[in-house]
Length: 159
Image (cartoon, rainbow, N blue to C red; front, side):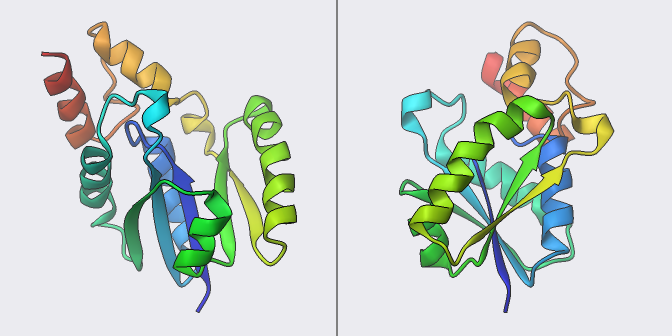
């Protein structure tokens, strides 16, 4: 069984993330979505909220998908869940510059785990969770960037 791991903070999950999840799930038998706790980043949503939002959104995807929080070294978590592949989404050159050294480090630490990059669909390349949170906080319409449930969670958070 080929297991893939798609890690991220998902604060919040966006339509771009969901695009990578759908496409990544088609490449493996089981996709584990690793939700990084990243307390040091000061996420808007707690890890339990991010897991719950993701679980709702991936429920409609016809694939074997699990959403699991983690707070360890990525390659250690990948080994724990039995992943042979780490899936990463790229929106543009800046994402590649960020991912490139991490991929090399992960490859050195766990040479048996491959990293696969999926380019975001063109319509999702401008979506970043950081920007979605800022637009939402300032009262802007984020409906083109996140699913309705996430849009509601953001609106509730700013009340």
